[in-house]
Image (cartoon, one colour):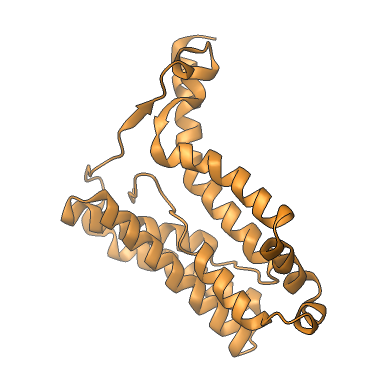
Length: 207
């Protein structure tokens, strides 16, 4: 395998990081019994907002923070519509997906094709020199490395901890979880808002 192909595959892993965070967030959400169909629009709007703030302030930290807050806000609207107002999760999520997508396209016009701040790559000593694997996995940016860790942490938390087992309970048997003392609606709000705050893009940019 030539070096160009390896670099291309490493690029795929880096680009996949925001999607991976979204998938993990949706997995946790569905474990809590909520289907968040607004995910696609939420990613676009969070990326646009994050890039706009990062470009305007020159701070990647503020850009990520803005993207996380936007994602949390969209997730809160889904939770309020489905849990408090008892509306269809599918309908609420579908409408929000279209709304967030169109907002991202409309508000992001001034920032199209503008280069902005990006995360530096971190080459992990020793591991970066491993043939094939070093180029693929250990010469990337911090958010991509974090996505590797989040996969493991999410699995451990869901299947090996008491809060994770409670999460599964409120999704699969909410009545039983309530009897055991769980505040089902509050936990669903909490889960949906927290996973909406996962970083959605290592380099927020709308094309």
